[in-house]
Image (cartoon, rainbow, N blue to C red):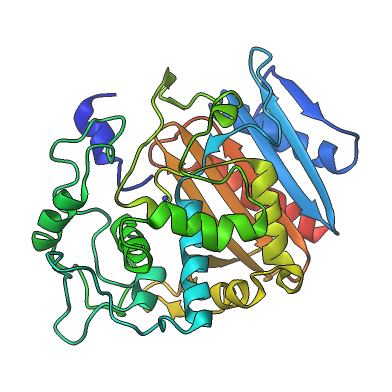
Length: 359
């Protein structure tokens, strides 16, 4: 894949026949229901894949891989844009604490020009619902970028320059337009130059997500899957500025099942009020009817039930989480490859959730 094409897909990164591959699954039943979806993930090009499921209070983790490399619930993957829902949860906690409101205008330190619309300023709600009017990326992000690690070079000084070059594509609050820049700025608005520590303190630590972090500890490195793109091993993404968008976050299926259990049963979580606020409907795109909470997207299962979901991707990894709170069912998937364009792995998560909810 050439440099131009690789850089051109930076904005995008938030099933078939049985393939040979070893699988790890404890017991039958639920694990057996998951196995065909693992096979389809391998058939779609994943070197390895791991699914986690919550159903009726039970958790099941099942992995499959080629060449004997079978991931499990503790295998570390880059999480990608699912990390945006953690940033949204941090926002919801700040709202609950009374330090900000959802309609608080975006504010950054002196020297950072915040783009604004003709009718009003960008609010924190706009950022958390992808309705800020900001483009997907800063105007200057890709100028000097490593094609396989596009955020690594970018500094706060670059961001200050880039914001002056970045016009709004739409008026704030008028339309849905997915924006890594928007969520990156949301993180900076909540904890300027301390976003990663803030996410640990406000979200990951209270929920016991010990492997959900932007800092790859030595013990995590020994458990990490190697990312791939177009069949080639690629480096992990690094990001010091827009990490509120989830661009450099790591996690495991075990951690994400803890996180999804808190989404299904927030009344049992120390972050109950914040989780409830993120799952509340906050914006509907007038053109498509797409509905959003804070960070989360809402869709429909085949029987009309509401599915809450978010996916993620870096150049080496693809992830997807979806749940039906009413039915108490959630599905998490992590694979160590990135698929340019269409996202075949997401459809497997949605199909598995639909099957489990409908049975």
